[in-house]
Image (cartoon, rainbow, N blue to C red; front, side):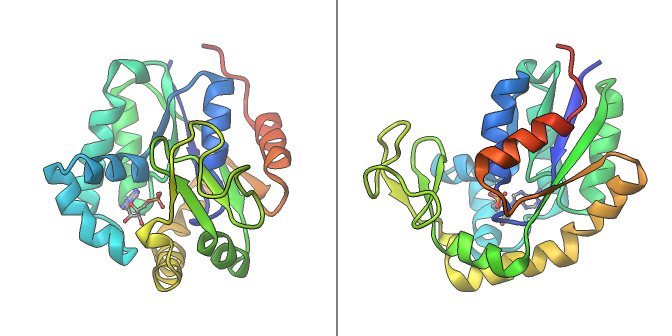
Length: 219
Ligand code: AMP
């Protein structure tokens, strides 16, 4: 049976960083809705053009568009054993659509690690965040700087500040999270799938806690 893990948490909690590490450990593809939207922006697709305004303002792309995009991604061959979802679902409508999609694929969400971080820490983290052009590896000016300023340690590509990591937009994104995404904490808690992890710890400590808490996955 294909298994799906949903990473939940506010923007800046470290979901992307953790997802990159644990998807390799678990052998599950990392499916990040934000990365797919950014890829579409870069390639100037119709979907990218549609998503751009919402992303620049720090708002959510409409549910129907996002759900169709994830449905397409999860239906591909590399996801036949499941996936690690990062940034999706972000609304109750998306969460219900995901359950429907996975039932069709004979799979289900097996665990939902929720990386919790207080709001004031998020503003600081996102404001100092730099992202690599090639693969989206992330750094922080003070907490996790690259070895050479402005250059990715892993693939040497230049680092840039995402448009939506600028202060005003960061505040809007946190507001959107609290209003539209945080109800999912209860949604998954009621299903007994929520695993709460303190996201203020060092990156490797969060990884260890996450891996320890996840159920064993046979692939
Ligand atoms: P992220 O990299 O996950 O912070 O996503 C960047 C932006 O992409 C968000 O601020 C939204 O505009 C859009 N986005 C990503 N995932 C979703 C989603 N599940 N639903 C709606 N919009 C999304």
